[in-house]
Image 1 (cartoon, rainbow, N blue to C red):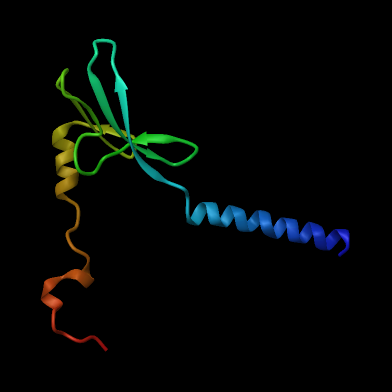
Image 2 (cartoon, rainbow, N blue to C red):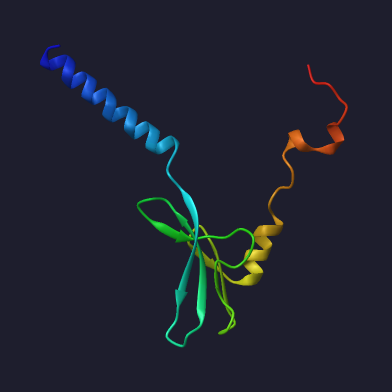
Length: 109
């Protein structure tokens, strides 16, 4: 292989790595704990993208401290009050069309 073929192969590998990172980023949902100065325990639900982490929880508050009675609602790192967060949750769609019970027994061709 000459140097042009080696450079082309290296460029092809770099491009493939970039595409794979954009298509399938390594995201993880983590539950993180922290002990505060007063001895209370704070639970944070974090969405970890690898290069950054944001507070996110679709089911409830993303930041919880039961002893201090503190709850913060976050979606994709944006903080909302309870009423706004609840309205966003109510606006979500239900089941996808292919799981709709009205289509049971019908055949699609």
